[in-house]
Image 1 (cartoon, rainbow, N blue to C red):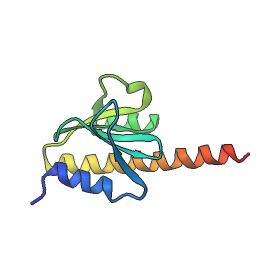
Image 2 (image 1 turned 90 degrees about the vertical axis):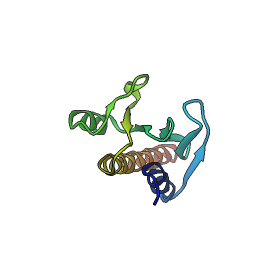
Image 3 (image 1 turned 60 degrees about the horizontal axis):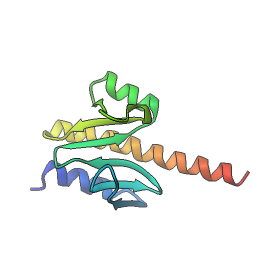
Length: 113
């Protein structure tokens, strides 16, 4: 049986055009294009980059906790130790991925104008 960590990683890796790369924030960071949208700190802690409204919603509903260093950039932190937390983490990762895709499309559209 896969751990919650492995399930979260497999979920991220199943998304189109996602790349795992090390960066200054974590040895296990996941990118869509140049945007780091989720990274792990060990197997039970991860940071997810949301839009500001998504971030506010996640914090208000208790789905995430405030990121220690970069909340101004939309980052939230999550603990991954239970099946319930895995469901929440997947939901927030999907939001972060969709937002990353939207941001890249918007930047591409602005460049062609």
